Every structure is written in structure tokens, then in C-alpha cells.
Image (cartoon, rainbow, N blue to C red; front, side, top):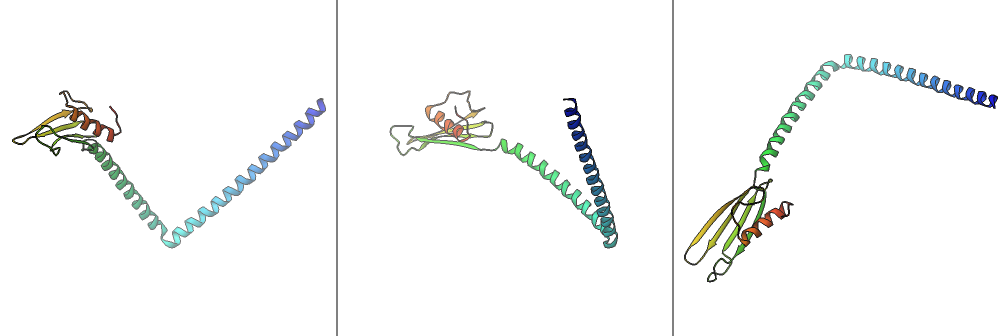
Length: 164
């Protein structure tokens, strides 16, 4: 049993040594290739005035990075502004009075990304018209809503992906 372990141990050591020698050869070849390419690149840059071209390329890259940073900043500003813009609308038309048809009255919910906005209601009859506005915060109103106003708000919220 002892000779079995010694035989296999010797084989493992030999395999490890062979792998180390192979890694050394690969490293030497890689280093020689890198030196050759480095010398060739240096010679090419010297012959073609490439150092100036390389400097211009670096300047162009820096200018591009600066423009990209400004564009990213502008994008963040636009995203901030966009959240406060009108994004979700719900409209319900209805007959507010028995003697007036054609659904001339309406409830209109106008919401931003955070579900803040206004609910505008217009009631129109034969002899007069009235318009009301109710503030909305987070998709709710502190003022009581009519069924039509609730329906308009529900439409706006559903279009925003929120369900209430």
C-alpha cells in the first residue's frame, strides 16, 4: 500500500511540475509578444506623428465624457420636472340636470406622476353653468367627491397603473 501512495504521489508531483513549466512558457511568450507589440506601436507613433494624433484622440475623448456628463445632468433634471407634469387624465361626461341632455356636464381628473393634481367639474344647465376645482394629493381629495368625480379619478389612477 505504501508503494502505491508513493507511485501516485510521484505522478501528481510530475504533473504539477509539468503544469508549472507550461505556465512559465506561456508567460514568457506573452511577455515577449507584448514587448514586440509595444515596440511596434512606439515605432508607428513616432513614424506617423501618432503622438499628436493620440493626444487629439485623448482630448476628444475627454470632451465627449464632459458632454456625456452634461447630458446625464440634463436628463436627471428633465426626469425631476417630468414627475410634476400632467400625466394621467380621467374624464366622465354626464347629465347634471334632468332638463338638459347630451351629457354637457363633466368631471375631469388631471394628475402628475405622484397622483397630485386637480379635479375639475363643470355643471351645465339651460340657464347657467358652474365650474368647480378640487385639489388632489396622492390620488385622494380632502373634499367630498361626487360619483362622477370618483369615476374620473378612478380612470386617471387606472391609466397610471395605480388602482384604488
